Length: 281
Image 1 (spheres, rainbow, N blue to C red):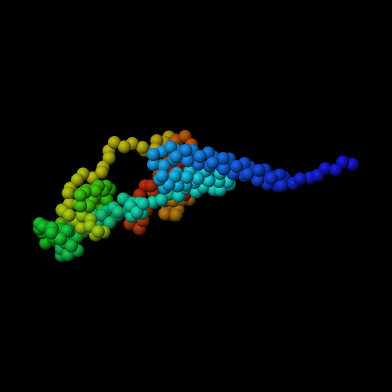
Image 2: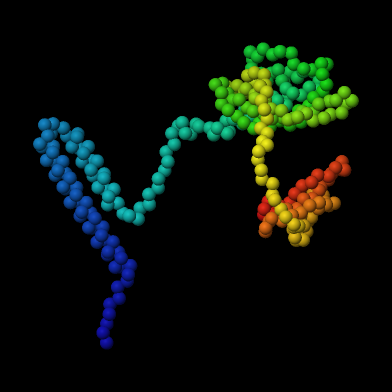
């Protein structure tokens, strides 16, 4: 019976890798010898061949390159981005703008609210050298409250930011009732210095961002299927157990259902559920 010697694959692989490593080092030695010989010839033939520092620098650089070329391929290479001090100290613009936005909205709320003695807090909102005219007080006019104020644009200026703020006021009528005024907008100049903010001038009236040319209402035909209406009423029950469907329609596979919800005032508001905008879907 013939006998066969079994040689593990791991042994063959190890011998192969050792042979490859020896070949790489032999090639590296040849390359280093050739480079050193070439550098030596240039050094001997050069007028300043006595400069040993240049030869040492050339040899050191060349050797470094050769060693890198024979480094085992199994070594992983990781690229690390080095951030400069300026990068580390940089602040995201949106974060830097937040104090100015907050100051502008706060200022508009206080400035257009008239409900009692003039607040010292409003005076202190301006820069220290502000020269203010007479401002309204309840003795001169009716009470007015700012219902809400929201910034919708911000632009850098030489000393800070110009913040555009849209707001609505509630004004007192002669009979004592309050009505909502039309939405208005102003630019507020906010000075910024070392993290502190102040109002640099009186508000500048501007037009609010109203758009009349945008279209996008969902076109629907026929009636939404029963499953859609049932799903709508089930969802509406989380807000008003007496929700009432007033309109429904379909647009291909999509559907739209209008229903009303109310509160303790007795008023009911039409709201909508759409198949393409189901919360949590």
